[in-house]
Every structure is written in C-alpha cells, then in structure tokens.
Image 1 (cartoon, rainbow, N blue to C red):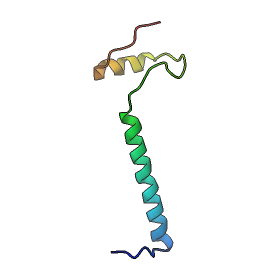
Image 2: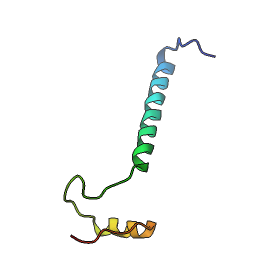
Image 3: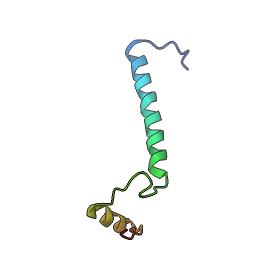
Image 4: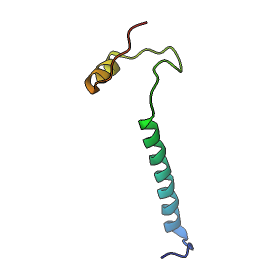
Length: 64
C-alpha cells in the first residue's frame, strides 16, 4: 500500500498515467457514440469514407 506521499519522477509518472487513463476513457466513449451525418455542417463523405461504410455494413446516405 502507498501512503500517497509520492514525489519526483514517480509522481510525474503517476500524473501522466492518470491523464492517459482519462483520455482513453473519453476516446472510448466518443468512439462508441452514435454519429449523425450532416448535423454539424454540409460536408459530404468522400468516396473512401463511403467505401469504408459499405465494408463495415452501414448504409450509405443517399445523395442530396
């Protein structure tokens, strides 16, 4: 057990590790979030993005 009295390089490593865990948690949540195409602008999908959607089984949007 640790009494919480960590100093120096070990403390820096602990802080960096904590930040990495928080970033990983938020990245995981964002990656799982539902995406709504076109809700933030008028950008269209590139042909590469359309092909990737087809390969993973998501229906491509109809051209507007």
